[in-house]
Length: 162
Image (cartoon, rainbow, N blue to C red; front, side):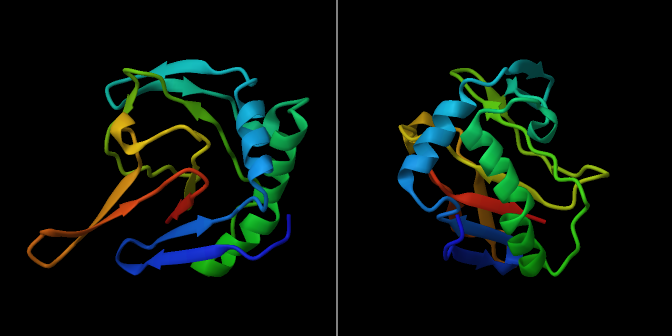
């Protein structure tokens, strides 16, 4: 899993889009398939309604590809993120998987947590299209707060936010 990744930086947002986190499409498909076998619990409040796993770093007997992905994020991707943001990450990286079905939602929010400096999103919905809704969206604005650029994320993109 050690290969060249395509990285795009959006300086105004301090956001990076990283492509090809996993080298082969078959790994992405297998990861998506194995993630679907995990236990998800519903979580709901005024900002969101979806299904969520526990912290993947603390789950015993993860499926092999999910376990390998967790290891990758804790090693190679951790180093990439530290290099991009010029930071030292905490010793423990927490990760969860979320599943959304029709009617689920996640409203705009700031994503600040006391133990989180960096957040990431990795889409595994191969058959998703823009008409389905639910895409992570960011907007660049000019000094008059007019949107001049919309940043889109697709299947296999990892977005990393500070």
